[in-house]
Image (tube, rainbow, N blue to C red; front, side, top):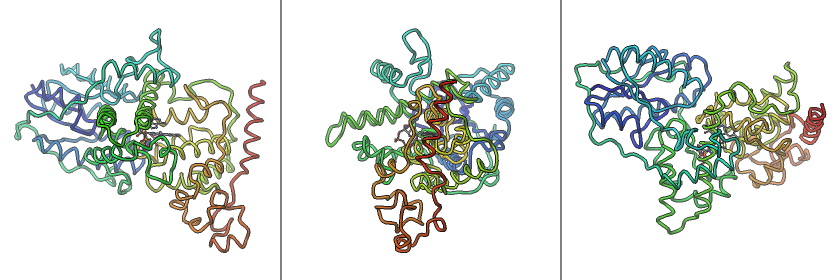
Length: 481
Ligand SMILES: Cc1cc2nc3c(=O)[nH]c(=O)nc-3n(C[C@H](O)[C@H](O)[C@H](O)COP(=O)(O)OP(=O)(O)OC[C@H]3O[C@@H](n4cnc5c(N)ncnc54)[C@H](O)[C@@H]3O)c2cc1C
């Protein structure tokens, strides 16, 4: 039996359910990847993400070659390409791991139907999450809308099942060389219509594993505090690996819990806080799965202050936010980190999102789209879930009118300004006393710091106290309507 394994967001060999199942059942296995032309053309994702994916594919191809398998690729509309591949390669069965994004579900259903017409069955597997939406439900079987309740049930399910990761398949059936032509080298980012950039986080399964090992040996044991300090390397930075499946959540959780079992200098509390973040990831996946309408608009129809009218002023403010030129150093450092590296620290993601929505009163969907285009870890479920959380429209949203004060957040989480200095070089010589609100410097202090406010670094785009008052007043008017 000849089986195609269609790789998508699962670019690894370890703990790969579709690949393992194909290797067990088939006498010939053909790995396939499809460059989704309509998706690439739509520019939902940006160059950082595409270059990271290409790096992952290169490594996957050589890892598969080590097993004697050739990763074949095609470019076009996935529906046509997968069906065509099955026809040309005379496949008896096609394997893939499930994807829970609404567009992907529709695509997969269409592929499955067309393959059925050819008489080619499809086998699909759970992979991207530890538990799928239907596996963690409320008392009456309903999808869950509160993270805390979901978390309790998720952990109960984990304790009861502890799903173990799969090993790399040992016996791998190989396609007879003459029967299917060998693939060309992968297209470059530029050939796909994107800029060539070196991913700031190293792509590929080996790098994901290496980073996990590094994190589990050290930073995870101080994660509770470390995760909130953007100036230090205190979180795992594994999000692009989870996004492209170069690391599975099962492997990560087992490795983290395994470190606890070994004893030594470990912190149980910090390890559990980190795993809870992966539970957040699953929570948002199940929200997307159960309520696909979240991609179209707010989850909850709550009364929130109206957004700014479209026009040049709104565009000017949005552009300043995108460019990291708001005059609020922590916001600007975050946006410049995003633009330069394709990644942003979680605490700062919350601060910049709050600033866009509440200080600038710009619709959260504009921020969501911008993040998708810039992030290496761009993921519909996590991105939408978090933006809706910040906008107070989500399932488990930030309380009503809670507004982050960018100066206080900055003082608390980046006290000496290490993070700001790293990404806003104009402020590198500004004293710690002024780094969070440099517009308060006297002219003399500006001269000493080599930074003229309003010339080298912008004045604040809006006055936070005033913007906060306006937002709250508009909010009250909405509620009393
Ligand atoms: C406005 C906004 C947009 C976001 N967009 C994305 C996105 O597109 N893709 C994405 O993966 N994350 C997104 N996040 C969540 C979070 O910021 C990142 O997952 C995290 O910063 C990644 O860094 P890390 O790998 O070091 O995380 P760690 O702190 O090491 O956490 C481990 C893993 O848990 C998951 N995780 C952590 N926090 C969250 C969270 N709040 N929601 C969902 N999963 C989480 C990630 O997979 C992460 O790699 C967003 C957060 C905000 C506030």
